[in-house]
Amino acid sequence: MTTPPEVPGGWIRLLVRSKLAVGRDFRVLDPDTDEQRYLVDGKLSLLGAKAEVHDAAGRVLLRLASQPLDLAKRFTITGPGGEPVAEIRGKRFSPIRERMTLTTATGATWEVAGSLLEKDYAVTAPTGPVARISQKWLALRDTYAVDVAAGTDPALVLAVLWCVDHWVEQRDR
Image (cartoon, rainbow, N blue to C red; front, side):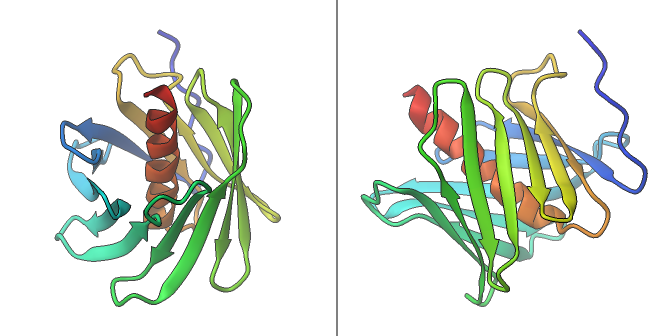
């Protein structure tokens, strides 16, 4: 196995491990201590896919929801009180590359582009890189390395990861 690239200065690295659950849960760990930093609690129902991003103390930071029977790849992301935070939309994808756009409530955008085969994604804003999401360097299936740029909300990056993973899992069924 090749070693992962170094984390750029000022960035943080998180390890994201899938938990066996209906709806796809993720434990988000500090890679040095294995201490849990976040939990992404996924839920699937007839009313659409949903998830919550929790901090280490169990407080809800973000909620994600798709619309039932929505053929478009789209999730709305809200804060714990229901206030709009962002929307992520998936573009029609090729068999190899995937593209998504996240638009925040303030109008800022992130582009998510990556390889479905390697599960390797780059998240960029007009000002530069925001995050890197990858399974490419890891031997463990269902484990991602997530590198988050300084000043970027890790919870929002984890919301993006859950959406991407959800869409990839749906495609593989």
